[in-house]
Image (cartoon, helix red, strand yellow):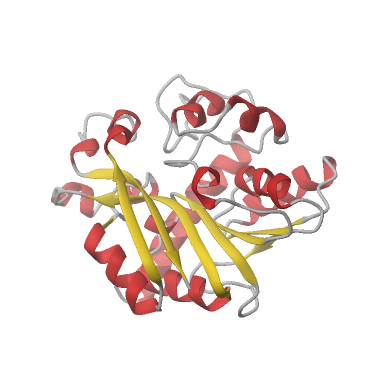
Length: 265
């Protein structure tokens, strides 16, 4: 893609998530016009439960932090420890950041980066109103992280990197900001079969976490080129059950799956 095309993709995604941040509320079901990767007539908590979040995780975060978006639970694979510095790529309203903040404790720190101003504002309001002192939300693109070199212990992300028009640049930036020995632990979608042309060219399908998916081999290559080692890309067959509702009638579960992606710097 050209730089202009890349910016068009980012703007489309940014506008879609702005709509979600502004219009959604804690009691809204995913049947509203703001829904993206949610199955019809389920609440955000019900959707997140299907993605692997526990009842405790769903109840300890600020009301409205969970928007029912994602394709897995990076908390379950990150093995966060007290005192660690964590970065969430595409942090939205702060759901995973707030969960991570409990695991790293007062001596740790969690940063969230999101390119949608309305999402960052919502997350900051959640943090301030609920007294979170070990979190910080920054406005920025995940291809150009506003984070210092060698400063992060763990990077998490939930179904966001597929939205980027330059995924290799995202992984290069992740490598830059991680400390030596730091780890990547993310949930994202991967393409398991060639997408139909009508889905490939559809920006709505991209914003719905479908048409931007890379193949497993592509993800492995991007990570290797960026310098990562001990790379794991593990598709989850059971994810087809919730993916089928992302673009109703398009049978997208035949082309993409959620995957666990892990690597070490």
